[in-house]
Image (tube, rainbow, N blue to C red; front, side, top):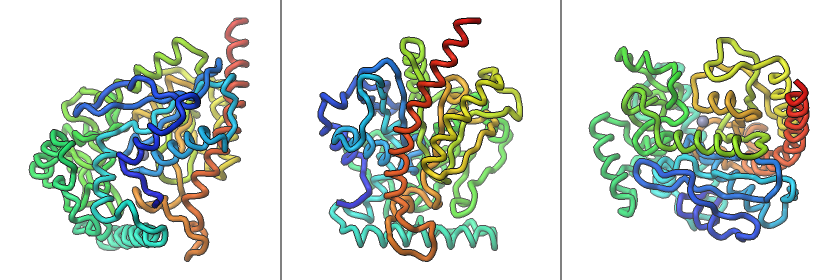
Length: 396
Ligand SMILES: [Zn+2]
């Protein structure tokens, strides 16, 4: 079996876990088109942790990492004390987007592909995106994109009929917004075409969208508009409307924080090899006041994670994303960008021993192994910081 997992394969793996180790709970909510946002729990300990993947569905490695991590826990390849921790997993935050992007992938790359063949697709996709990045820089070219042309047969038509309402909506959206051919491979938004991370009251895009500005994505994606409903970046369908996925996520975080000893969370995106934490404020934080101590606590947790993975640390925040809201309201939350190579959804699955440069070497294996280790090493630090803070708060 190849390294790519499509939506059905993800669910098959998730449903196959031993329910004595990882238990499927009730979904935290449902999407607009009715897909469950599934929730799984490992352990029954005092300290609660949340781990999420796939906010941006084209960042497919983030779903796959979370699922493979759960699998390692189930197989006892990783040892996390289930008497001490309760870990909540939301491996597919954006089911509609994941259906769209993985259907696009399957239009070219079959399930039963050999490892070798699959790897050539990943490398070709990476190279094509790289070329388009160069063309965008050099010529400001917004024409066809080679990496999208690889997936030019991935139209709304390739969605299975069991996804009919979503399929019909996409048909309408492609027509109305004149979406570029092959762009389903870059689908980061939910099925309505709203980017969940931009779907926030303080999005910097709202004023620009309202003023009618044409806003394009960058580099090899510069033929995609962020001011219109589509593959990425668009902050809302109706101004002020919060998407069901975000509503469910916020409610879920609140529930865990209000009822248990919540010590932190890991939100997975891709790419950049960066660990983002809530650090010094450049502008006023709309959701919380961060003391110097809080800032240092966030840093110490993020530092352990960064040391284990070799990722860069970044604490700057401008509070324009859903994830910045989660980081502000639910300390200590880390946002991890998996993988140092650009070109989602495929390049993070490259797993060659040799390559034209170091960045190609074992991208996939390093992501899976380094981040699994980083979580296990970061959890005890989250507990320590949580307890120190609570003792302090109680003596005030
Ligand atoms: Zn992202």
